[in-house]
Length: 285
Image 1: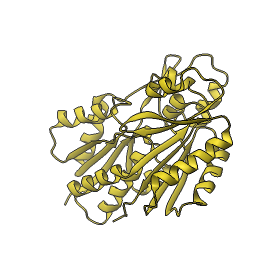
Image 2: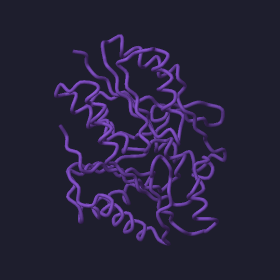
Image 3: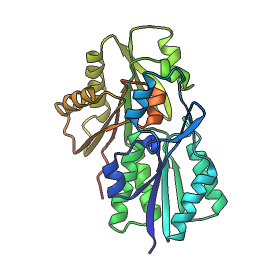
Image 4: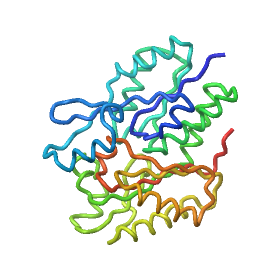
């Protein structure tokens, strides 16, 4: 029986302890800054990104991984007798999934399954970890993929940004811009639904944003358990800790982690962003 390798992109922001524990293969997206290319989370870290953003007049851009890179990753894993399950950021946000799909087609391998998550951040990571835990117990590739799909159907992503500037510059503002218009001095609340950033409200203060995010999380979870909860932040660790404590006052959280959003996410969302990614109602095997 073949082993199963799990692959995702760096924007999933899966914390290092999970990557190492489950031998998850994270393929870094690309940050382009002043003509130089940096591998997301490898050549540039979140703290390095925000330090440089404070002084550099030129803003970075991003690029997805091309199909030939995924082909090399997949081919190496196949050569080591692995089956492969990959879950990637929503195809509506990046070309990463299409690159992985193209790589699979080029290899013509039946034992590669790639999934378009239609979501973002650790809402990609939780189902991948769910499948990896199943594989440890001998579950086969197709069953792991089925379990991952179930996990994806029970995830949610809610967040806030300090301003709409970075979403606007990254070209990902979409419906949020139509809703928020040109309002200044507001803290937009957003939700990822079917791969799109959807406006979920607006508040005037940071504290109110934390209160609203807590209430939204409680409503979306709706009592389902077990609850796997991740809070990602862009240079806002104290607020992430406060938000986690606020949510835990209202919900029984079975597994929780606070982590830094990847540099790609930092570029897209900007300093101060907070994102809640949860999976609720799907038990570990």
